[in-house]
Image 1 (cartoon, rainbow, N blue to C red):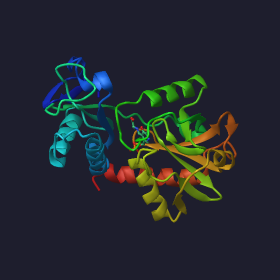
Image 2: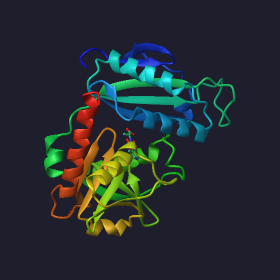
Image 3: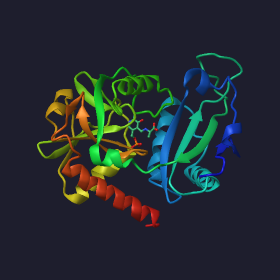
Image 4: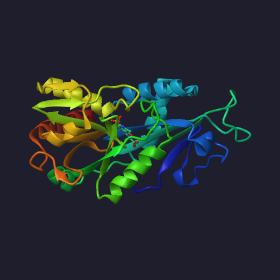
Length: 288
Ligand code: PDD
């Protein structure tokens, strides 16, 4: 993507650097909006339908009318991908409630949602991450009670990542009432007694698309997997811990709060499922 990036803003394709919204936009003033992040491989959006479904659920949950049907969304995403040269991209979709005449917590009912779709290069994961894994820290989950909505209101997530970075870690693993919820920008998997476990879907975490793919692949590979609560302390005895997200894929956590996870190396189940994930991506890229 050497050319200047182009973005879709409210129906028009514009240079990203020139895209502008009103300071009265409720996304800017209140974080009143939702978003998606869709990876594209070889210029082809991956699991787009699942992302658009989740976007629809987020919009419905906050009462913002969905500005487009799935066909129109797909056309916009494909246009932005093509306009940015195709290849491997992270495509960001954002819908806010729109710009009101004045700042007021109570939203007018007749606003036109603001729609932004932009893309940035999706870089291959660093060799170092694959060989050595990453560090994570456990932090108290101070977010709201509807983390299943992919809201742009991410201040608590930002603060968690900031604190993780301050402690030299790549991610914060969030803990509420003694249980793992998810990462600040990822879902969490642990291998406990040879079984892959991830916290169940519900209002405390985002139902990750990559999380679903990993569970599908585990079933296909015959790896025992469960969606069940994970106590924060369970992570102290986990053989493996992974993070999953659309942009980071499957990332092995090899140090937790400064202590090695398992033998301190990316584990065998991660290796198997990461290989399966890479194979799925390759098939998708090839048009399968
Ligand atoms: N975030 N949980 C949170 C809080 C997230 O922000 C994300 C992803 C996930 C993983 O979801 P998925 O597998 O659908 O990407 C879980 C994206 C990548 C972001 O905010 O950029």
